[in-house]
Image 1 (cartoon, helix red, strand yellow):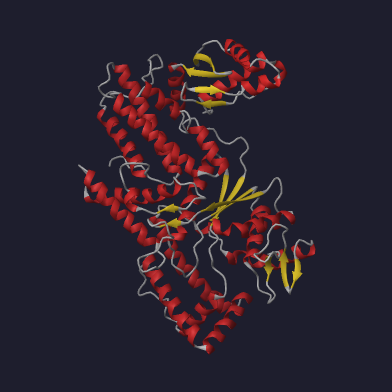
Image 2 (cartoon, rainbow, N blue to C red; image 1 turned 45 degrees about the vertical axis):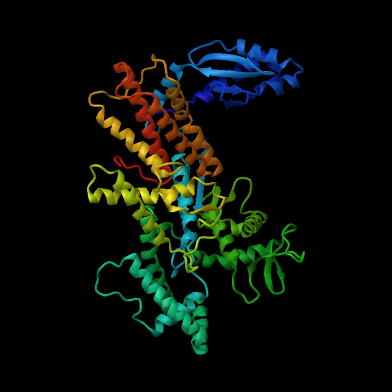
Amino acid sequence: MASVPSLASTVHQRVADALSAALPEAGTADPLLRRSDRADFQANGILALAKKAKANPRELAAQVAGGLPANDVIKEIEVSGPGFLNITIADRAITETLAARAADERLGVPYAENPGTTVVDYAQPNVAKEMHVGHLRSAVIGDAMVKILEFAGEKVVRRHHIGDWGTQFGMLIQYLIEHPHELDHEGSREVSGEEAMSSLNRIYKAARVLFDSDEEFKDRARRRVVDLQAGEKETLALWQRFVDESKIYFYSVFGKLDMEIRDADVVGESGYNEMLEETCHILEESGVAVRSEGALCVFFDDVKGPDGNPVPLIVKKSNGGYGYAATDLSAIRDRVQSLGADTLVYVVDARQSLHFKMVFETARRAGWLNDQEKAVQLAFGTVLGKDGKPFKTREGETVRLVDLLDEAVERAAAVVREKAQDLTEEEIAERAAQVGIGAIKYADLSTSASRDYKFDLDQMVSLNGDTSVYLQYAYARIQSILRKAGDAKPAAHPELGLAPAERALGLHLDRFAEVLAEVASSYEPHKLAAYLYQLASHYTAFYADCPVLKAETPEMVENRLFLCDLTARTLHQGMALLGIRTPERL
């Protein structure tokens, strides 16, 4: 089905047409239509246009209003102040527009006009290391953006740039050669993520102790790094065992987060090894990078250290080793040239902003990024504890991500059990996972990504305030009403007038498509979270003011059930795009 124009776009077009007719010399003028508290919309663009045309703004506004006869969409137009237009929409138009949205499985949300290919780089854990709270935001924000962009019609390539290369592997592989059964598991049963991580942790700690205390082991470990970089067969096979064991663990954590991570999308640092030398060669040949004290560097006029000297991006170190920049630049080449991407989105900690600014600028100088192919960093802030400091355990340790997720589910179970009237223990456990994980995701996604946010589980699983549980309960409440409706079915009745709470809910439902378009273009999922919270709040007000099943006439019952049903579908779709489940019963 074709997309459904929003009321805002319909009114915008009609006011623009009337404005062009009243002031032909202005051409296609923008009436600057905004939502308003005084009416449904306000057109603010007439003042500036009148000033330009040396016309009286109030007279021009009256002329435009006169060219907008009250019709099927606009109920009332009022000229106010120095030349604003206050516009009220007809109740019939609200209901008819919503009915058209309800008839479409995409709720009237259009596909993007010119979809392209976007690579989203997110969820980047390190091999042989435990995931901690710092890994949460990249995964949650990235997953939501992938879903939102795909819904908009974009072709999205997921990339998980895991840390699977580097000097620490010499130490780990050498230790495994000398203690060959440390990664073995008893029998042929499937290994859990916790077991895999526990083996890796044990090996990492033991190898680190040896590396720090035994000079001969340290030498053997360093030689092993050279073998790894040279692609020596046995060394690579043992390296692969560490990667595979880590993936068992990663996938179990992402599974708890209710996220799908596909093997084909995991392309770690090692995936670009073959390209590093060529990347450096191209940069040096083209003069983008220059030799400085033996290292291959890229310099920038606006990047200086505290001493005022330029701080370069080091692509290749003076000892011949490659820096992170070589890998990141090779990844850009691969994503643009091999995957055909026109947009690269990096969901990476804000503390790496300078590195990525320098990498993107280097890629532009080399011609790998240009006006057609662009890269953006969706930078995110730090997760803080209730005390406003970086989130740590009482002992000052970094918080394990898996412990955090388990605790959220535990807290949610208490909330669900308290409210549950007819749920079995099994159903309570299932809902607890959906509510607990949803609470963590929503707390993250409802904050602007660039800001730090406080991790407060008590607040996150609260039924009151801006939480996912509040939204999930609104959805479950609607499902309960629909189940109790018996023979009465949702049906739109455009001939009925709307109560103020119905109008407010209807006008907000109509904004869904425009909010999604804005979120997809600006990479700001918190705006979708804000929209959904406002939707649940409008619904709560509607529920309080407008009896649904006890409405005065059968038509009013059907019309209110229709508003309930469309609200539930919008909540369900919006929450799904944020990666959050909406249980039918709570």
